Image (cartoon, rainbow, N blue to C red; front, top):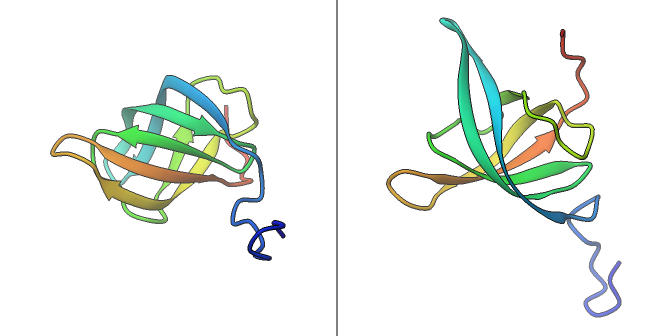
Amino acid sequence: MDGISGKKPKRSEERFDFPSTIEYLIESPAGAQAHKAVTINISKAGIGAYVFSPHAEGQKIIIQSPLPVECRMAAVRWIKQEDESFYLVGLECVDQPIDS
């Protein structure tokens, strides 16, 4: 709980600024599609980023770029269109093994 409102904080992990370009894959019936994103913040539990095409909530992505946290697979928890060409997304890290 925070001392001001008495409410429990929403986030389970502290976020840190992490502006970086990353690459990720999305599985589809046609195979894996490569995409790029620009991260804005990161924690052990998730990532805030800008992406350049819409994704469905719940969609899983496989992160290909090195990160300072153990997050190789994430699920889109929310998405908000910011402009005609990019979207702000909240990604939640999920514990699933990724085949190398």
